[in-house]
Image (cartoon, rainbow, N blue to C red; front, top):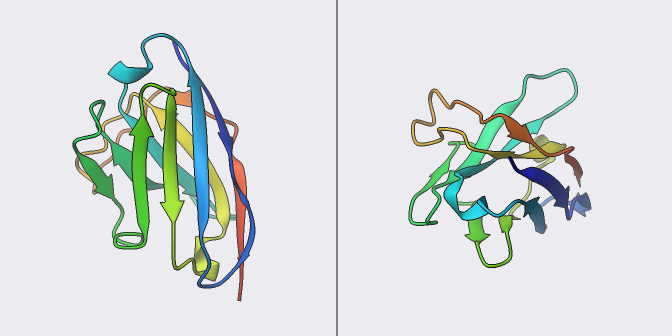
Length: 124
């Protein structure tokens, strides 16, 4: 079992950057795949990025490819999402997820473990 707590959200102007963090509890953190999803008001939750348990493979939604970078530090039980060149359409609650299948970005299977989410708002 793993518990996830996100942080780092906030208000930023278009073109700016934010770095989200997701701290996990549990001794088996390094064995989990990890991912980020987001949900905007009135929209379905969507996949953003995923990373393998070693960190050697990373997966991105087309909408964020080239702008966002996912990484993990297994020694710190933390996964990060560096978000650059932010756009107003990136505004959403961002949620951390564990133990999912993220390698096929057209049919991602979220894992059973979710954080509570952190709000990201990008102003134009």
